[in-house]
Length: 96
Image (cartoon, rainbow, N blue to C red; front, top):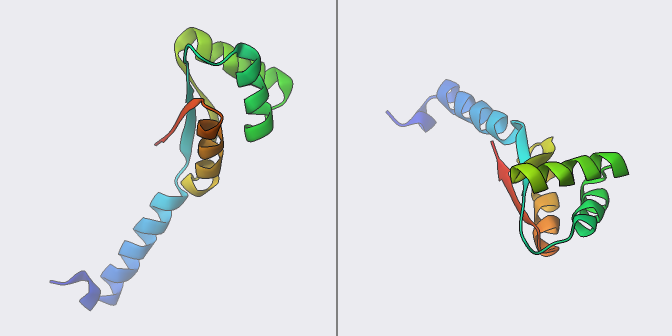
């Protein structure tokens, strides 16, 4: 049966897509051997709007554990932030 033949199935499919798009995702920042502590901290302040303390804490976590969730939100909200971090030469990725 084609799901588009049934309005109920189509509506359910639309709801599932919307919920998936609105699901909370995590923007992760990964450690690298290129960028300085100060640059990473400054980037988090400018791109993710962290305050100084939050940015420094995230930078320490990235340095010592290899990665850190720097922001949570929808994919739509996180995508431009991820792109901005990548443009600065940082290693970032959006995950579920």
